[in-house]
Image (cartoon, rainbow, N blue to C red):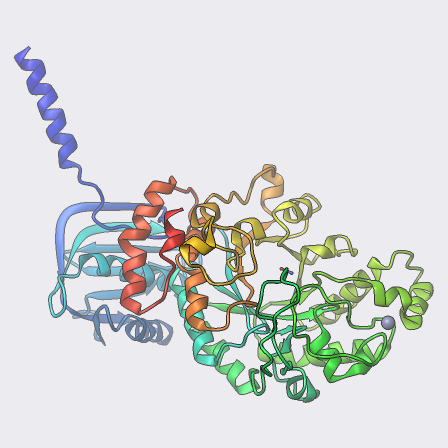
Length: 533
Ligand code: ACM
Ligand code: ZN
């Protein structure tokens, strides 16, 4: 008996000796092993990287996290954070080791992998800081990590409301903080054209400005407008775009620009009325929803216009993908337009929806010849999609499931899980949420998303990644942008990066331990209420 008690006691002692992990990380890495050593790192860290790229990453990190740690660069011998690339690893893979002998060593398959490791380092330092002017006391540890999906993205709509270059850069910083590697930049819509096109200056002279803005709920009758012109000078110049592209690249983020066609185009039609079927009577739209005024595909001049615009867009954005929209296209104008009807007859097209497919396959060929690939919203599945287009599934996951089954690549951005313009609480008025578009997507809902639901092993390979959208009809300040994406980006981050999810309680406790304090440290505004549902 005494023997049994002593066995039980020693097992209990053994269990007690296995400590809970001292550091929480979001997104959850593939593996984290902590040991009992404690590594003391000075308040000012010395970074080493051999290549210019690694040195640049160190500089960018030093700037991004200046409120967390002091920063300077040094030699391999005296550095306490050493960065290496390792060709045997996958591009975005990294390992991070903290030891008494070597300090912090981060290895990545490419600068991107190293950079994601450096984001993890920031999370570790935040939790092991002894306070201002004091050293970090970091547990000895070994982390091995890589992303599950190659495409992990956030979209920001800069049309309904405009955000400045500095704000867009801050948005990119927030993406990187969550190990998200793609910025989908929504640049043209009915309510504002926001990218300078040299050949068509009226797009931003006329197309950027609407006479007023709907501010009440979409259901309110009569509708409530603010009576204030909006958008003069609110567009990105070519120089600004080049600057933002370089800023993103330095943070391992690729930008996908979106130029909407054939719908969501009234700002373009107001600028150049010959682009529409009726040829007159257009305005930059002051309200929200689905607009019947779309590009006329029956006129050759429309194709030349779109090609010219895309020439300039391709020139500005080095990434492989161009998003060409395709959502919410009513066909009433095409049905009544003699030019569009003549095109249908000429091409033997019997369903008006397939005029959209005709446009898309023409534009896709045009872009392919420039080395680019297209993405379209899931409506293109009904408009006659080519096998090589990537489908962005937004009306729930069903479009993505359908697309994967027919062998199209898919990006999942289901409104039911990742429309971050939707409310974060069940009772927005009670929690004091600002006026929004509707919907209900609390943090737990985003976290519950299973991108492979209903898909076979074979079909799963077509799911390229996951994205969250932020449409900005009711979001006019960047503070409000932050409050809508944070902390819900933590769910996006973990669902797209981590192979296996934890339960919600574990996830929530890690978000509380590391991400909310990180937002506080960096001065980011985040929703408190949504976090608890
Ligand atoms: C969309 O939300 N109309 C893509
Ligand atoms: Zn037409």
